[in-house]
Amino acid sequence: DAGITQSPRHKVTETGTPVTLRCHQTENHRYMYWYRQDPGHGLRLIHYSYGVKDTDKGEVSDGYSVSRSKTEDFLLTLESATSSQTSVYFCAISVANEQFFGPGTRLTVL
Amino acid sequence: QKEVEQNSGPLSVPEGAIASLNCTYSDRGSQSFFWYRQYSGKSPELIMFIYSNGDKEDGRFTAQLNKASQYVSLLIRDSQPSDSATYLCAVAQSMEYGNKLVFGAGTILRVKS
Image (tube, rainbow over all chains, first blue to last red; front, side, top):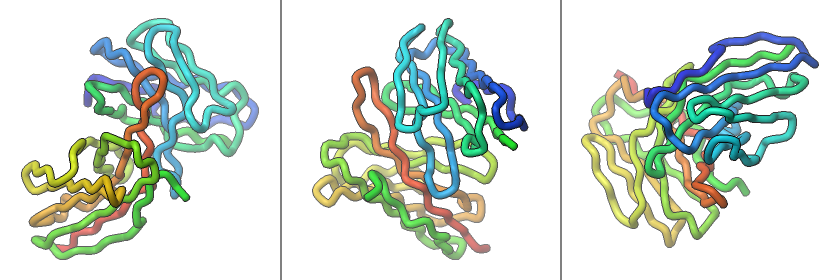
């Protein structure tokens, strides 16, 4: 499982509330990624990080922010959740050009 | 046009047959290609990667790449019911720092016993 954990694994929240998802890795990998997966769209990159405090946007970054204050943790925040952000969120790490995924977080925004 | 395209399926094959999964991509400069398997409710699992034109074999899996045609495929020989899953094709694109993966929407494979 490449030493990646995500928390929470499931969350139901209401529109307009802030939500933070956590990705934790145990092997000091430099690159970390957040993707969302929706039917018919596959996996789409939200944000990624190339080191502590170094992050950049992916293709679907609107409405999301990230932070990485420690190598092992990459946080994804929805400042004000909307129903369109109902999705499954996967964290990934990169090892020698290959990406490995965490178990995912299923988020429902009502 | 999507950057990475796959037939959504489902592709149904009998047990023991060869399953052929196909993927086309639009960025002619792409260099690295990946196949992931995803069981329902689980995370994607990397099963193959290929960087050079031609075939790459790993057990029952063979990845095939044709950069001139911008086409990558995955063959699964002696298909088993446990191979039933969604198969995701991904193409690496360079960013300022590292690479990102662009995924197709996936092909559902069903192996019938």
